[in-house]
Image (cartoon, rainbow, N blue to C red):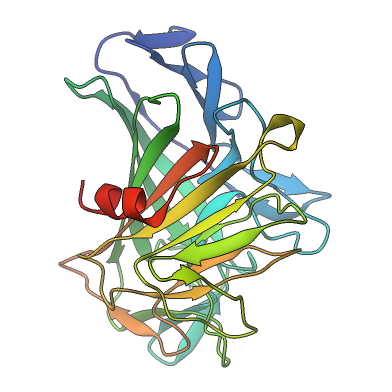
Length: 307
């Protein structure tokens, strides 16, 4: 996997860390770490990372830390080596009638980060923005891999209020080739899209607006969010992650693929049937994570959905 990128900083160049209020962004060898005061928040993987030369990936978040400092995500888990922290990927990519790769399983799939930008809002929240090209060994011109999708990602990190932190994601996908389609797994599950590979405690529970959600082998209907809770904090204290769908998303509320062990949690869209991407108007998908300590009820989550 080849990587090139431009670092665009609003205030300071060539520093080890940029401090804006409580939030600090630090350029490290392989990516960007975001810190809130003395607490780690997340790490964005910029440089290609692989395991024994396989499953090479970038453009994802790992680790994601809880409010009390415990790591919540996994990378290269033994049961699914292609899973990677907080990521967004699809099984199917088609140009016309030619299938050119499987970004989910990282087969015939490369990403090239071409630009990174940091922005500070007046409210002291921070944006991490990136431009990423998708490439494949199965799509070349004169023997050279030709980009077929331009992805733009905006990650909006909010300051912690001691009980929870909100992180918003906006993923824009623009086709660089005509007749391009993406889709989830070509089976009854139809999984693919925005996903969190998190550490799952034995007492993990899933809930939505109407109460408990029981994971199934196939997708379950969403109520706009899923609250994943259990002994996720330090010392097995209670904590959780809420995955929020956005009302502006196509197919809202998008279905959920949920797993109690050894897998990811997925807001599954579009499902098994691929959808077309435009060469002029990008597909925009929006999701949020609420990382919290203690407990969070459905009433509080409902208020956060509308923020």
